[in-house]
Image (cartoon, rainbow, N blue to C red; front, side, top):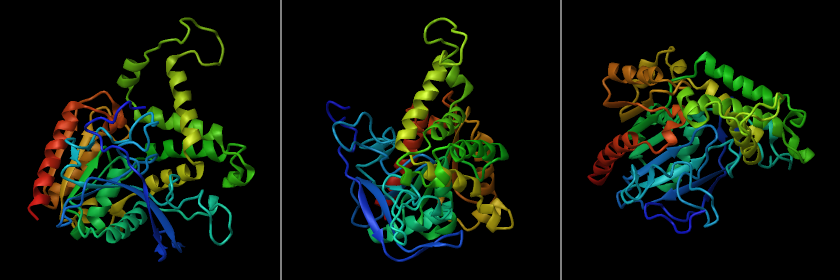
Length: 383
């Protein structure tokens, strides 16, 4: 926990909840009669309401992107490296909104919320949600906050997909889109990793068909395995070699199946921690939203045609050792944007940190990101 709040932190933050009574129509053909969205804000909205930035989270993310909820917090929000006074997303210049998506498990309406029709947790009855659904719900929040146009919509991984979808679905409401460590759609390999993770959860004896809330339990082992599989794909081989190598916990082999290598200990710890803090039904929903994402399918399976509707400027960033969403996937986006004549800035950052690099304090990355956002802030201040 911090002894004192760092000077470049947004400080102590209190989450907010916005309730919506009007039905939210979903791509799956169902609707949520009402819903809650939990979000946080950092910085001040200017008089022209032109300096608002939306932060979209990735698969296991949430609204708490920066600062601290209390002095007892062990660490700040998940993107604190990038959000705060003087940081890449400078809260002295921007009004930042970070949201927990529908279907989440950190306060927004999701599977662990109470279904008003049954009085029980939604569980497996919660409707399937997609990136388009999230963007539509985020637009409703923007309306409530009086934000007609975002200075930028930014996200990494699944968050980057949301930024891209914003640019496609609401072209007049986005000035800049930041698409970081992302892809225009998942590869078959990525869908396969997600399916392995889902099966680990679905086959856990404590899953109870998704109604584990009623049994006062949860699929702990399934969540641990799902997170372990996912975490392996978020790191690069170089990063794992540098961090763990083949180091043994006790310095010798025990010739058994208990934890012997440091990397095994790390993965089990990550899985155990995650299983205590994330809802299994939400994990299933989020991975499916990833699988379904493909904006080109609405435009004759052409990414170029999908991006023709956009009018904003783009920042696209990839990382050399990201094999989950490799640089070639970002280049697909960039090439399509160039073909339709959009203003796009692209950088491939050389790092050994893998897919998780977008969360890490990498000097070259933060310097480039900050320079681009300085440009965004200048534009916002002249409107």
